[in-house]
Length: 427
Image (tube, rainbow, N blue to C red; front, side, top):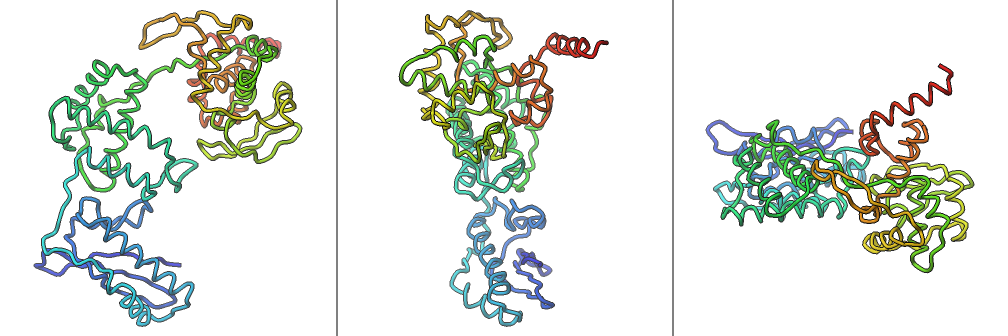
């Protein structure tokens, strides 16, 4: 069935125009003046092609109030027709008049235009993501609200932008100044003053580019300086490590006491299942049988089926076929480092990693954390020759490219595995 739409109509020689609600239902067609007048530049004539967009653009001073009222009108029409069985456009018009006669906003004769800049629009986007006005438009969670954890990064990026303004004694950051000059100055502040890592800086640039893209989609700005090939989110390698099968076996066989044993078991669950920390420390099991664990991932909300290893079954049996009591992320990371430093365990060792392209020696215990178990599962399954696509069903990776980057498989690793397969095939 058709849904109501908002259209802009303007007479010749008029400075602004009227907003009309059109609704076709059961052979009848309603054309209803909403009571709102705006300039054409504030009307988004493509809004109904995207559920994220509204009839009135965000740079209009009363955009939120007008869009909310128009949304109420359209919903009211559908309720009257579909639920209350109204079949006459004249009756529907009378019902609209009665319902909304006291709700129409009387606007000033002078149209108000909000002049957003990067900071003010960033604040608006965060507010609307937090209250659910803006929802996710891509991926498996399309149409759902943003989680608080995903908005936290944007809060930090906004904080860094405000520090940039303070550093350079600016009032704001106009959209037309989000260009390579801004990029280089912001980069210098992030690395020289804030001492950010490349991965953190990459997150800041990712957020800025996303906000600029949204501003373009909502007709708030036409500036495209952020799309320069040099306005880049740098690639980087995280310093997350993986634990070998031999060290995992030593850890599995070593008994600790109290919370140390519980954290050890939580860590091993990640090593044996590829589950994320938030999944194996705080989630509702969908089903669990002799061979498979079925669950819903907290991060993506996708349903995943994971075969249960024998070692994982041993852990479940210790807790009456349930999971160990979860701990906070902070407590987990602190405790697992202490476990790896245990002299009785004897698995801590010095390893070489690259930081900003420079080789650096660190102790393995310094890098182990809540994500290490998951990466260890993926890396060890790969090194055992398990087909990538099968491992990806457990890790949730969508492409082999992202999976291989995740486990950091080298050309030598790939060549060794290919040689082993050739031996098995006798060629």
